[in-house]
Image (cartoon, rainbow, N blue to C red; front, top):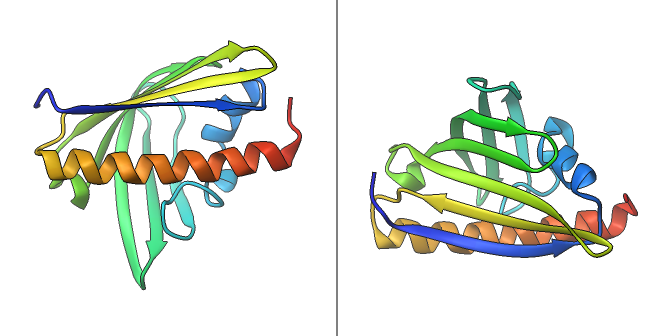
Length: 144
């Protein structure tokens, strides 16, 4: 696995518990977990060793992402592998850390192990778009 990584930080107007729940709710994920349009989550087994599959939809295509949960520490930390065509079907690792921050939560997403700079740059753009969509969901939910 390479040393190439990207890290993004985003503040959300929701409690760490609400942010964690949103990141682990397979039905809610579909509304925001895609930089394109929508996603579906046919598999989400939220436990260490449990697997997930997220299908991102857009441009008439279905982009499959799979992985396994390595750490599940409610409500502050998720670590999971991430495999997709965008990683050349190689295993990478995503760490999501959620901390109380004033009236809301600070989310730090770190994605490591990219096969190359293009993969890293594309994922940085994709994760940025996903985190922006998630902000709209948090702001609209009124969840605290």
